[in-house]
Image (cartoon, rainbow over all chains, first blue to last red; front, side, top):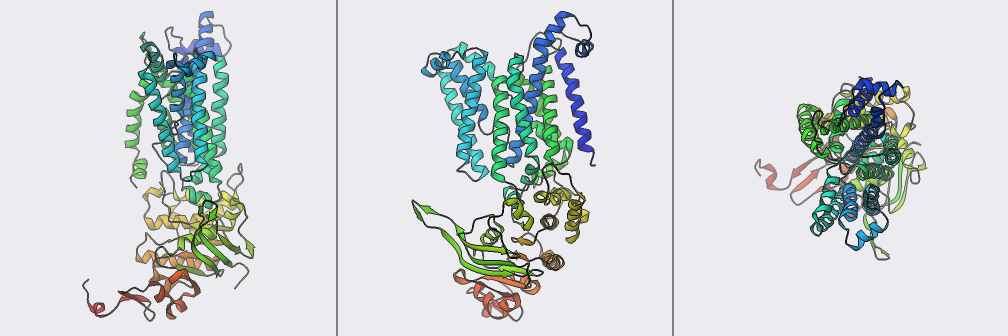
Amino acid sequence: MRSRPALVLGTLAVLTLATAVLAVGVGSVPIPPSTTLRFFTGGSVDPTAAVLLQQVRLPRAATAILAGAGLAVAGLLMQTLFANPLADPFILGVSSGASLGVAVAVLGGGTLAGGFVAGLGLTGRAGLVTAAALGALAVLLLVLLLGRWVRSVVALLLIGVMIGSATTALVSLLLVFSDPDRIQKYVIWGLGSVSGTTWPDLAFLAPAVLLGIVLAAWIAPSLNAMLLGETYAASMGVAVGRVRTAGIVATAVMAGAVTAFCGPIAFVGIAVPHLARMTVGRADHRALVPASALMGAVVLQLCAVIAQLPGADAVLPLNVVTAAIGAPVVIGALLRSRTLAAGAAS
Amino acid sequence: MTARDLEVDGLTVGYPVRRGLVRADRVILRDVSLRASAGRITVLLGPNGAGKSTLLRSIAGLQHPLAGQVNLAGEPLAGLDPRTRATRLAVVLTERFDPGLLRGGDVVALGRFPHRQRTGSFTAQDRRAVDDGLAAVHAQDLADVMLARMSDGQRQRVMIARALAQSPGLLLLDEPSAFLDAPARVELLAVLRRIAAERAIPVVASTHDVEAAVQWGQDGWLIGPGATVSSGPVRTLASNGAIGAAFDTAEVAFDPGTGRFRLRGPAASDSGP
């Protein structure tokens, strides 16, 4: 019984590496796993394949691993802090903020704000990333500021949802007054993607996600106590306010960074923590944080592989895969899990 | 009276309210001085809305008192950091939570939170405290049972075991029998009495169940009319009419002789409504 979490974590770590080898192989030019393994072990590899691996496939796999891990851990944090199984990394409006940033940058070409953004030279990919990060940061600061006055988590949750609605409304407004070319660029960003990230991008994404995971692991014992509700946690000596702030900051840093580079990736953040709980079988965050991270990495990599439609020429939008394939899987798993059904019923 | 008693000294509880620059606090209970003896169970009685929970929460430090002091074993509880305070006193609340995947043993182990170092492993001492807590409420067989599968009574016993795992010098319980049936309520009071005696700590439990409290309680704190608080052996509170004064209505009166509520007047002999 006691070794089950260790076994789960070990298996997930191996799976993460195995899916990475699989993931770098798929694309317009398939690379067999044997070549990939030879590349890693320093053997001689066809130079074209080596460049492809080095410049395109490895950054893509690393992005999927980081994004999956970050979103899953962020989702776990939100579900525990808000004692709500439907919470996800974006529930505080972080992705809406990022969307607004990107919408202003992409759609607001002729407007004053768009001119300001263009003046900063934020029009290419770097522009999208910066705009998304600024939007996410603005929403995070607003939520933290309001959180100082709000005592109840439910009120904080509602504030996050309201901020999300308000920013979505602003995006819709921008959409109405934009020309179709720009709208398409915004829509494509919104479909999510782990492709196109470069090593310099990863130099920002990796520290952000790792910082979030370390912060989550740091507060894991307190999160366990928070499962009994905030009053019980406080009575057992948990600094509830500080844990809540740490969790929100960790979530926003991870969700904000991932959204900035990959767009708003749906489903992973809400579903993977549930899958991790079912697999670990325990409500212990010291095991759930690493399990969610690894499982998120595996799941998002698999989704990215499927999106590449191995054998076909077309590429599916990532969010289509995460939602269309992931949702039924999770619903099926939830229905089979009697423990979770019982927990939801009481 | 021993050195491990709980002393409440001039405590005023309620909610701080500010109207502009003027303090207009909503006072629930004013200038309350009480004592709970170590080794005995003190039942906190009072009509609904009298301020039982507010008083308990204020003693527990979950809510700031407006004035006054709480001393445990001669030491003021105010000013202790939350973690240290959690090693001195433990509470059992009415708060409900989603049991999720938690098992009985997990919940009880959470009681060791204030004693554990961040990186520390679960020591033999932690293990013993958890086992002792479970044994005190006869819940050893619930350690591996999912909380979601337990009855209200079993869940309540696990929550008390968790409080005991904190190795507290004071146990506070808010309406611990609220969801229990009659035999379980009496058993709970007996268990709490034994815990108080065995651990030589004060146990304070608020309850709606006046009849069981009078029969099985030891000492009593009673919030009566006009938010006045009286205390004494619970039988004395019953016989001197204090409980009657607090709870009697035009229809119902507390009978000190039987320790039960009865209907007043001719309706008392009717079996119908």
